Structure formats: C-alpha cells, structure tokens
Length: 172
Image 1 (cartoon, one colour):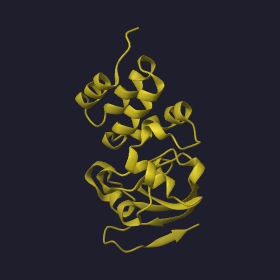
Image 2 (cartoon, rainbow, N blue to C red; image 1 turned 45 degrees about the vertical axis):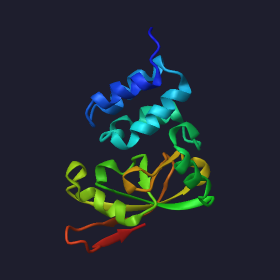
Image 3 (cartoon, rainbow, N blue to C red; image 1 turned 60 degrees about the vertical axis):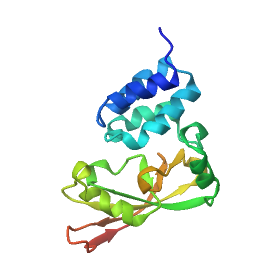
Image 4 (tube, one colour; image 1 turned 90 degrees about the vertical axis):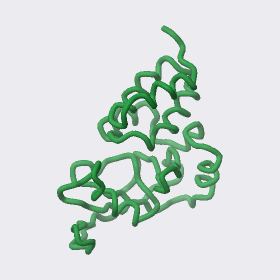
C-alpha cells in the first residue's frame, strides 16, 4: 500500500465536496502516519457537512479523551489551554442529530445552525450541555464558531427554537 504524505492528502481532501470530504479523510487513515492523519482531520473538520454520519466510527478511531493536539493549530492550543476544567457548550440542531460531536461555546452560533440552509431542521432545538476539559478532543476556531469537538457533552437542557427567534419551551 502506498504511503500518502500530508500535502497530497490535503489536495485529495480538498478535491472532494463538503459531503464526501470526511469519507476521503477516513479512507486516507491507513495510508498516513497517525500524527499527520490527525492533523488532516483537524484541518478538514470545519469543511465537512456530514460528520454525524461518521460519529460512531470517529469515536472509535479518536476516542473520547483529549486533547488531541495534532488536530489543533497554535491559536487553538492556546484556546484549549485557557479553558476551565468544566465548560458549558451549545448545539443547535434537530431532534434527529442531538448526539453530534460538534458543539460551541457561543450560544448565538448554536442558535443559528438549525436555520442554515445546509443544516435546516424541521423542529429546531438548542441543546445546552456541560463537558469536562479532559473530554474535549479539540477546539476549532475557524469560521468564528468557537467549536468544541467532543463525544462526551452531558445534556443539561433542550429548548425549542421557533422561526421567529423566541424560545417556546425548555426541558431538562
């Protein structure tokens, strides 16, 4: 099997569209050094629109204990290091994808997600969760989303988000 260098892996990944990019990255895993593959995964994370489809496979591959330093750049390392031991995170989604790995520390970012064209949810919700720093795999600062990658956020509450922007219900 041919070894694939990081630069070539980036080129191949960017040639894929946002819905097939993660599949490309996952296919490259066995053909790359582990540290370079994790760097690639971190670089491509914000460019993938179907992470939820691969959630269980990703969890098996990268685990639940962080940080995975290879997935972050220097600025993201500093942001991770500055986090307290437990943080509040938010996820805007629909009821069918509440278990995602992508969360944010910015409530307003999460509130917008279920209304974006790519992620439009019929019944938009906002999940508030808590996660221990040791269970944060990476911090991603691209696209100004203050993203937290974790498989271990503990749900604290769920709010329904109506299209007029007013919260209509909350349950714990």
